[in-house]
Length: 196
Image (cartoon, rainbow, N blue to C red; front, side):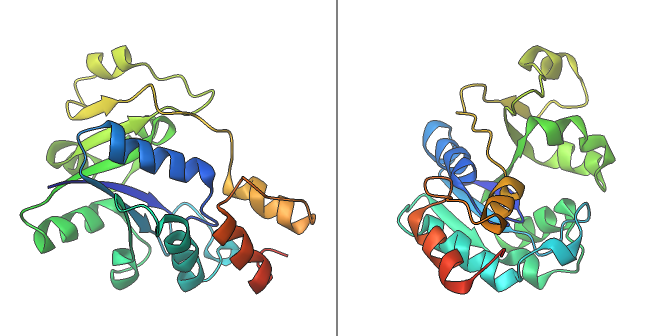
């Protein structure tokens, strides 16, 4: 079984995340996509994040009707801050019969050389890349780059210029976020008075 791992703080999860996850689960050779909720991204301030269990709940609400998507809290049990290589090696050991593929945006691919043990990631795991608006890495660039033999670009993934930052700001300003997040997620955010 081939599992795509889509990492994120999902603060909150939004339609853009779901379109990418669903595309990878249905239009590639992946059997499933696991959305790995990250408790602490080393590149983000922890104070700006909603509590882990709330972000996990929002992600579960967003995906519960899709059998090809699964939410994982694996990083909650690992040392923080979360480094992708540690999680990948842990999953590989825990599920030896599964093949794990890292899903990332092309902006992350451009900065992959700054990640902890990035050579190990590149050598041991396939990477499926989706486009990002105004990023501009081409498949030809990847093919010409000998450092990335396991990278595959999917240029047809629909792009949506939505960010969690935009949604948090909209909520703070008491603006409507209908359609930017799934209805169940919107209802939970309103009910719990998040991001106000």
